[in-house]
Length: 546
Ligand code: GLN
Image 1 (cartoon, rainbow, N blue to C red):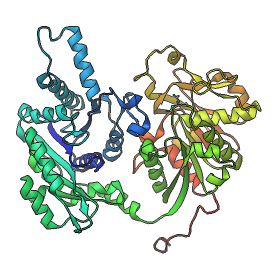
Image 2 (image 1 turned 90 degrees about the vertical axis):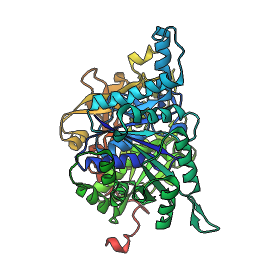
Image 3 (image 1 turned 60 degrees about the vertical axis):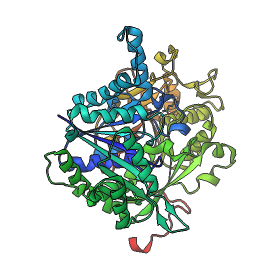
């Protein structure tokens, strides 16, 4: 019988619930306990694939091609697992499954209701993940904040689980926030008390309360939360804001959360082994010389839109004994700025990540041209590959016309075009080229040097591809097509000859990076970028690091 841990959030969104869940997974895994994770998202979209990054942040793609919440990225990075489509459940999925069944006649004669039909459907997702994964502990994060209208069916479903599988097999963790009042200079617990009251009204009594705060939490406040929320003091866990998210498993361990969970759920576990994690945090805390990278994108106002890219750069910098000095360049600003040197002068490397739609494209092309001509390391992810191809084609054909048919459908030089199967599609949801596809690497290429093997699997999310009609002309101009999908000959990786490191990939390597195991392409990109000398890029080392 698997054990279930349900994590809810109170008071505010963005208190770090996802990181807490990922960190709980880390500390359980460190005790030899197997875990599977699921995120419940209350919105009515079937998945976030059709939402703007401004609405939702990054769309995280699983190996089996599900477009999911960015929290899954943190689960994968922290616990070092690969999630599947069973790890993300949305209200949209639950309702559409139920209504399809109703139309099929599954409920003939019956009235379909939130309880029990919708809640049964939600619970079936928990049980499906438990069966398929075979994990000992199923960790479920309820998205949103307790009190949200959309979240009610999820809370009712997790309440019912206690009776379904027995109260010894279920644990409720509530993550809240303690606001700081400047005038009285104190942290307040009242919003936490109200949030727990709201949970109790539904019938859920939390077993553990994690209190996020930007200030140290005094013992008397733990006492207060313990008394008013009816949770033993050792189960009131202070989560004071730390510099790096990767410190959180150690913070939880320090307060004995691992042992608390083991005891409460009656799990047999080994003693904790967080040695590797401690080493990681030690390295993060050691001051390093910076490596300065420009991220040229169109959604830079919302850093979450590039969450995994930022993490992957961070892991790669750490591997290369550098601290990541990432600066965000809006591609529309780059388009308007005249000389790109004014915005990119200090960049030791330039990264152009994924994106959709024509806005900001010309600024990205300018960045690719700048990188190619000035021999600055360039890394293009999906759209970043398209940009690199468009830029070179414009030089080859001595024309501004080469483009992607995504942006200019009638272009004279469609160097990037819709894949054949995409041209036939009438609908939008969940039908890009998604998830894992194989790629074969050419020996002697930059890509092969990074991966040190010829056959790789990477995750995808795109509709367009390199148009092979232009293969020979671009090759003559120095482009190397170093990664090809053996299934259909689609170009997966392009590189530039006579350049220290200019590479674009059709897939999203950022999803596979781990803090202790950076992705090979990110590792190489930063490895080359770190030695590039740029004016103003390398401030003197802080004393402690010398
Ligand atoms: N818009 C491009 C496509 O659909 C690139 C997608 C991406 O960057 N993920 O192919």
